[in-house]
Length: 209
Image (cartoon, rainbow, N blue to C red; front, side):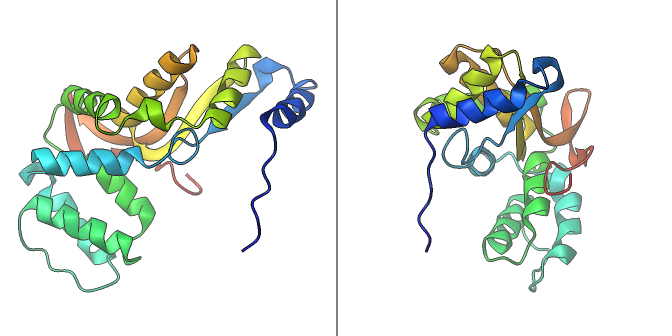
């Protein structure tokens, strides 16, 4: 295995300043992933685990979960409760039999039937509590976020995790770093009258999307 070549943050900032100079802040944007980049671990998977734990994957998601089964590349039967189907899809994903993009999308809408506001509240409680997002922030990446805001550059967190938890994470990042709340591009569950539906809204934030 080749060694990882790490650059001091100051050297990266110098390169960014030189790249920014001919553009101007109003024509630039700073984009970063969240999971494994701004913070350690995966907030989408953590939310999925918590939603399973509290029993929020129910009948409103069944048909959409069953529709994912043909996309699993190993035999899988459409049996059991919706939560069992969701667990089986995640297990298939872990063994490489179900595409990550589809799994990330599924995790964004698997709590169909629940109020988006309640999912946000659960996400915030998780991030501030058991997940411990503040302790997981990666200092070097956070310094670059502070650099961007200090230069007047728009900052975006681009993630394949569900929008409710990524936006709550963005608020915590802003509070911890003393900067404005970064904008977010992420997996967006379809919402009607405040209720999450078993579908994705817009383009998946994965790969070409």
